[in-house]
Image 1 (cartoon, rainbow, N blue to C red):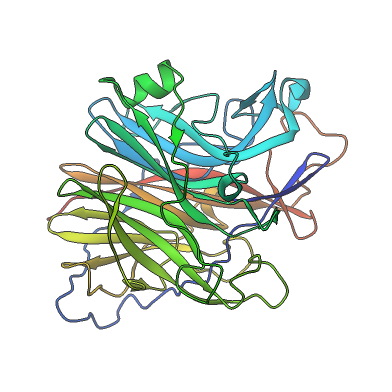
Image 2 (cartoon, helix red, strand yellow):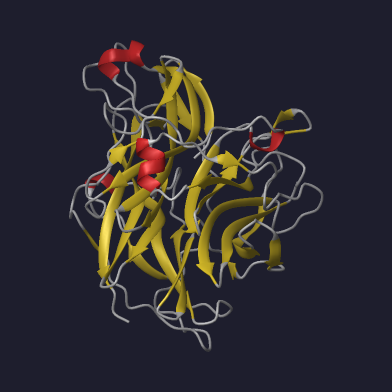
Length: 401
């Protein structure tokens, strides 16, 4: 999620252009690849587990990244945080506007904890990391993914900043921040202690601004821990004008897909793919279980702002030859009726729990004046004739292999 600007009480969001192909569920599989028999059902059936835009809920949550340990589920998510008594706060109360300055916001990463497998959540009020002073990550931080190796909690994310002294909107680099757990749990360190991550000084996967290449944008990382190393899977964009913002006149996306890089625990790069390992995949999370790599991704829709998008899955026995994408979830209920994106999964012994961003749309202005009671924060669309709302849904599939 990226911030564009704030006008009165309206915040307009502009996300990275989405152009991934939907694929054919019945297409012939490539040699040596496997199909997935995962079948997901929403649980709860017709309600999200996280709402948005009203008191007690995040302002505009998106891009969930969930990991689990013995205590429960840990959610890292992108949202706006607004100024409250000199600090940034995750929620907004329309009936008490003075408590939280919606005109002074930062787009960054929040945290929540669930002790009941993701049905209910306790939210940390403050962000876990703030934009840095360095040019490469002084803008928005988004699309978080966390992983634990030893006693270190790693948080990978996409960052925007400035280039040549000027704002460089919609141009991302992958950064990482770390937190020493000090023998405690993730919940204790982040929720009880209020600890913040320490950002690594340079991007671990920098963008290329010189030539058109698959790494003109590096974004949307996810992490697999294998053999004592961090396998980082990330989306790369090729741009026709690599030295210009993504929205500059004449700028076009030439390629999109998922690439792979491997790091040691001290974040030394030891291996990187020479191009995409999975072309056309977008907003992905990679998991390795039951002897195969599973890539859960977002397939393109048919309209603005993620309209009509679906969640798909690719699978590979070797990480080289992938199946055609199989659709796992489509829009079906009110809270994801506009579209759904950004899958993240917890793989348990008997079931796999999927969380995702769901979008809904209502035919009225987002912020009419004067604001009526119980106004919910959303994204204006169609010149503010309609309003798009975010939420996070939950679905479950049996683990069959």
